[in-house]
Image: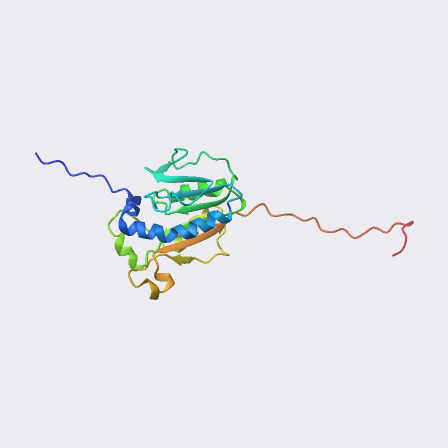
Length: 211
């Protein structure tokens, strides 16, 4: 009797374990390494899709791999991060699934300290490279929708325009930047605004020495 066909949907991030996905992750590795190295003196958090590319050579204060709707690594958890609020100076989020992305970004904003920065690596839906992840379960947002999610999480990305990196197809040397496979977004967590008391005019005192 033939085996019943599986109705289970493919794991969205499984594509990053393919040759095409590994090529994309390898292109991101130098940028992620430089971002985390610049913040090495302070706690950093890196959420990544696993799949091996760069995981063993990129240093982070805490690196967690997306797994089954949660994260795995030095600690295993669901979408909610069992980490103290305002505890990381930098957070790098590398390709979170669209399903649950709102909650993940909200958690990242919570653990990011005031004045800290979040970097979000996402797939570019207009890149020709999208044909390589077609029909793999990946659902890709455009940069404008990601920026709105970052803002809803309480982060400020107005001062940082999107950046583009990674492969485009085969003719990468001549491809326009916006055709590259990866969009990199940045957002800051603003601290409480400093409230300065208005300066009071000096009082005249009868026994004061005139200037």
